Image (cartoon, rainbow, N blue to C red):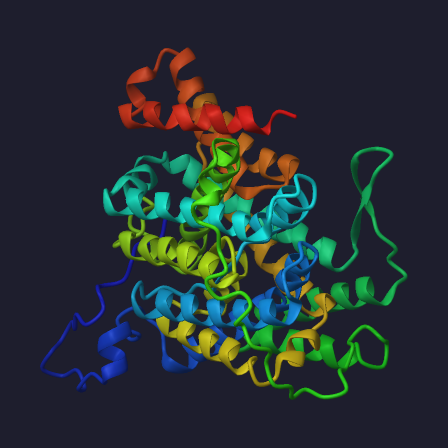
Length: 454
């Protein structure tokens, strides 16, 4: 895997290097082989790719009885602060926002089907964040990441890529669900969203092949503009609107009520799914940005894990549950972003949405879908590094990719691959290749898969 650049602030020739600015000392932009302009473009690309979250997440929460206006403001504030923290504290290019899987679990299952109060559901997310924080402080999250086999790390990148590509295809209605066959089917390619997405993919590929700076932004802007006369881009009456008060959601959380024994499986589901989803996203996107060391690890990984843990707890307290690093952060890596400065710019973009909230509805999914498809398909290249000649490496890696799609959950795919690695190595008589801490991880993994059984 790519090796990481020298630590921020380390100069190769102190005598000839120009004086470092405060921003340079904080982020080490030049040391990581980037530039301020590149970080700005990367941050803008990441922001535009993930901006849909401020529309989708509040909409899902509203179906659970959460005030929609307050949820929109709370989500924007939470994303801006968590993304800023990821940039300043961890110095990594990531958007941190409510995970759609966790939000859907709250809205449609915990509240919708089991009729649990939404403030109690937020309490469950809070306790999963506490578990994250404890494991981070004790170094267990970092240990599990470092013990993860190198072949699985490559597979995680490929699986994430395929998953991102699938999201793009779905957003563009290029593929749709077929209930009769319980499978995916080709969408209506004669409709404008599908045609625009395909045109966007061609445009983006051509721009990338010519190494045009800001290819993602150009593609998103072009498809958004072309989509106006075609009725794909919905232009609001006004782009300016005062945000609703988040007051009805601030600290409206039932922490003690979430500790009832019957809620433990939900807390555990939040914990395991987000644990592996966050870990996999960090590894895959950091690898895409060339920030991993020779063993495929993230130098200083405790910092992003701390930001993630505190974001989960803080987000649940203000009404923005299941905060996690977003898959769309890969847009920054593909735009050349390598430092937390890109996250700072993305955070600024989300903060501005408080003044122009309707702007988030302006960018149609058909405009962001080509970016997701392009990034996802290109990430499949990581699979070439998997040792497919050894079945004990090939099978767990392939399962990681396959089950990510089969289960529709990136965290579950990683958990499957890790469990398969331990079991396959053991039955093949190579148990010595399994570090003993991974056997401890198998206990919660077993329980997690048990909770998935209908």
